[in-house]
Image 1 (cartoon, rainbow, N blue to C red):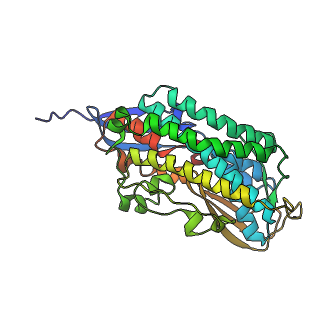
Image 2 (cartoon, rainbow, N blue to C red; image 1 turned 120 degrees about the vertical axis):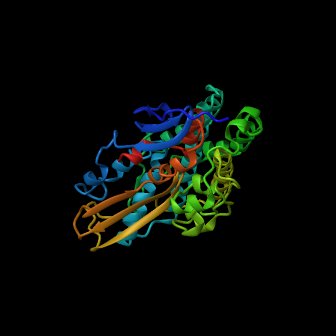
Image 3 (cartoon, rainbow, N blue to C red; image 1 turned 90 degrees about the vertical axis):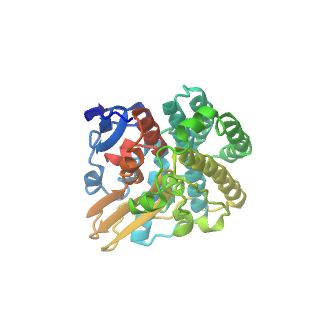
Length: 367
């Protein structure tokens, strides 16, 4: 016979080490069973959108690094694409390829941390995350080689990239691309059939297909729910239509599927990198763009498939040197709204895992 207890409200937070920022969950419990979850956000708010309305279009680029700082160059990419769309700027071929290379390196780096921290939440203390950190460090070495930074990269520019890659970059990237499939196989052997991982994730935190669509979820969270939607295919940007790659999807939409989709996406990113390296043309790395850009009056929404989902920038121009309005569509913020649907009926320990499976970065939630 089920024993009902008095409802108990538990504050989880306002801190959590795996959320990359400050988040508070106000959880209502019946014993250990979750009956309600209220997301309390805003502890990290920095006013980036309002700051952007008081800076020139070029000066905004470093602000975007501070959104999802686990994949900061991706934020640069989305923003400069939106500005180029607004101003009608053509990007040189070589710069397009360099951007794709950086974006897919960034996707792998992000997913390595997403899966590693998720397994840490699950109780696999440090071993998987340190394995994955090993490969992420190699990527950070490559990013540092390109632009001198290991976290907030600030490499993309309106019209291309800040400068061309050094001559030692491509040989190092080729070595990484050749080695990475073997490391992903190693993770698979270590994790994918692990009985603890299966017991704690299979059927846990299910996000049904209809609910995923209705909550406007995107990225691996959406694709894990058997929705084959990827902006690189659905609304191709840059030169993604030149590459051959698959869109992995789950079948159930549980925590395991969200883990599995990210693992497969790393394999697909390696495929894209192989093709981009082979096709990389010679030429200029950036178009000639005025220092004080004045796009024509109008508005635009530019979006990309960031590692965490749909990252979009809405810009309104009044023909001045700064945007009249600047708004960011952050994937983590939208994906987090589905947490309540995934968590009700599960226990406190499961809630930690469900939250970890979303891949949260508060930098873009509390922007």
